[in-house]
Length: 218
Image (cartoon, rainbow, N blue to C red; front, top):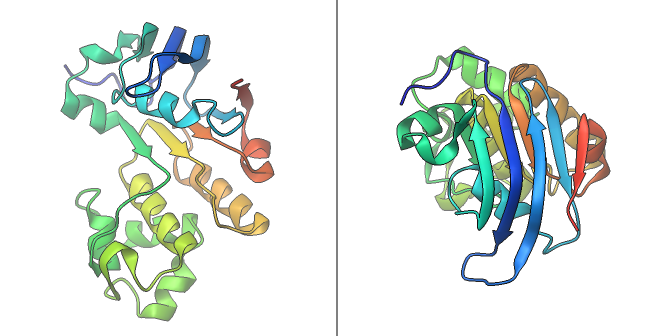
């Protein structure tokens, strides 16, 4: 199954009902919305409202109870795994970083020019941090040791950007950042991926203010 033409990726959710993995009672019932290229949608709601479970379902990693998830007009279940991962990237709350250099951490997204690595680091406000540590050849320990929690999170976000996804799913992407940095990172993210459809689980004002549309889960 080949992905649709560049940039032409819509997400349509129709009457979606979800239970937690291993659960019985629905946490989301009858949810419908659409997400278009270049649009940002924020999912809000109390802890436990199902934001993370919804992101997993939209990434094809959790089976809905009822309803439909269409990506590019086609049911997500009909996409081959390679085609789906070529157009969709999910950044969960906790993303693993392996020991190695900064360049190696970023290169997991695929072959990339050095200038593009720096562009992604600038987008997430991490270029100055990496320069201070010795540049792209600076070594990180297991799980990103050598970076703060917020820095490691931004490095994982830069890696996600370098995949150039057409649909980017983010779970509280600015967790651990101060408000000005959070707003700068979100602006950089949109600048790097101007036509991506972005859906994020959000709980901070910076994330909610950044969205074109807000979906509140009860």
